Length: 283
Image 1: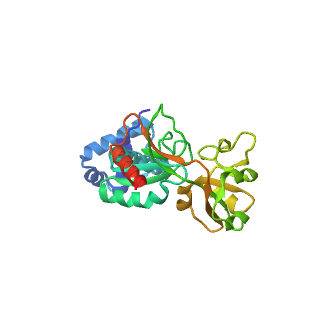
Image 2: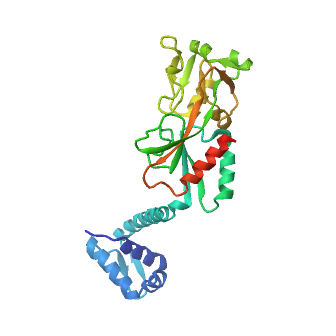
Image 3: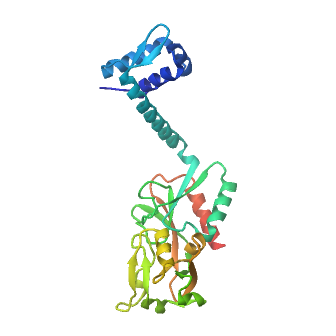
């Protein structure tokens, strides 16, 4: 059985127009072509789809079942074609947690001014590649070491680490916390994409780590009290909320911020985006 999209499009056009003549006008083909295409579809399916007289047309029971599904299939195909033909008119920037932190809004505004013909879309995907390996973005901002075999990488800046705690935590009254002090606490961390690992402390003198899988769950758990979190400063500017406070974490190594993109067939606007991100971090 060979059913073609053009055949389904003709069927839907006939139903929408109400006649073969009007469907032909809508499609820009001859009435004879419409009739032949419908006949070929019915022959392929081996079932009648329309009852037609000289004045009216009506769907058969099978036709009534087929038309809604044909509409959905045609709509999905149209969307696929739009994405394929206009992919370079949109730049999708992936990230796992906090995009560009305090630079995010400036990046969006500057991009819109410098590249009005390329729409910018931020996509949060909590995977090590920020969605790049999954194909949901064109380039990604990551804060953990990427797979350099498959992705091109450039480091654009460094971010300080901060500690996050409930607003009523005893440490919340302090201006800063030392990394060594945190070993006595339970620390929430994301094993997949987080930058907080036991390696921050000497072996045998490490805090208990409790796993989380999402930044919102992480913040909710910390706000409930009893645990703390350690994160790049970008999280503080991207996800400030009531119930938690962020404080500088002294003696902790900074976090490298990298931009990654496919080694083969990158988006044409990749280098422009990387240059702008790097400039923001330098500034």
